[in-house]
Image 1 (cartoon, rainbow, N blue to C red):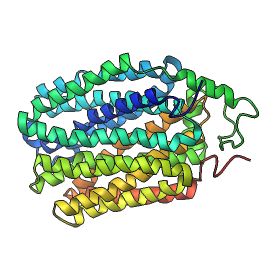
Image 2 (image 1 turned 180 degrees about the horizontal axis):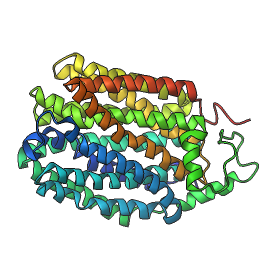
Image 3 (image 1 turned 120 degrees about the horizontal axis):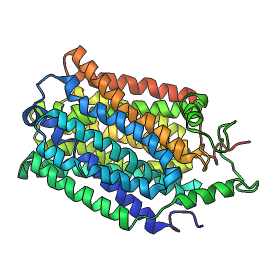
Image 4 (image 1 turned 30 degrees about the horizontal axis):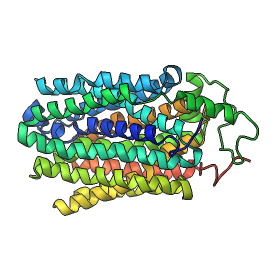
Length: 425
């Protein structure tokens, strides 16, 4: 089998289109729904813990489904798991349209968590199957660029759709088109990539497979079970544990952007399209810069970009409440987005560097389990910080401090994982 982006360009493009639609699916819930939680869905003003409930549910469900998706992908194949994820998403638009209370939004978000855990994991895993080791940073950068471009586009388009058609009808039609198209393409156009992963594992078994061998964790079984994999990723290998905790904490930022940025800006008189554009600056910067930062890590390495990105992203979060006006808020969103672009694809690339092909899907699934659990843990922390502090600004400081401390731990425990820059002896 041939490996590489050029050799498999058609399927790589199909997977990029899939992850664009995955991003648009979550993006439709990130602008209109939180901003109108009080007026449209009956959330009392100042009920911070109730407001974050839907993101808490999303985080715990998506985290669990990332774990499940990684294991299922090695048994059922990537395409079947991807298609299952889209079938689960079909009820989301009507649930939002008919929602009589915030509880229905929480249910819709649970389904969204299942969808995102299955589909986003598979688009990343499938592209890693198809490409070479020296393209991992680039391919994950492309994957996350496409996905978060979709998030940003959906945030802007749903703002206009809600203004033109009403919030419920706008989300219904937007969601139905996106999810329907994605399901059809997953069924008809996406190929199964599990054979590529199995072929790569066979090549790695030969002594002369490659001149530079990655620093794989020591003492791992040839076919590790679920318990062994979870222990390896979570605490047994310090490098993997450092990457997992950084992934978990950086999702505090995305939870803040999802839940409190729209509310914070809406309370300061910004319109729904205006909120979509300011939050979109974060998403567009994050998405576009990943195209460069993923490729850059293939040359310069992952570790410095990951550590610096944690600190820069936290600084962008801290800047938001320190000023006023669309220009200031957009600039702080761009700083946070650039920091996220430095770390987001390269944490995943670092995991892929030191995960053996025979259990890479499971390793990525467990990393993504911890990372997206950060939505739930972060949202709880946001709600608690805002409730104890009495205002939304406390949540911003909570996230900024958490990012600074997590970046320091990653710097201390982590190491360069690129096999060319730090090969196994």
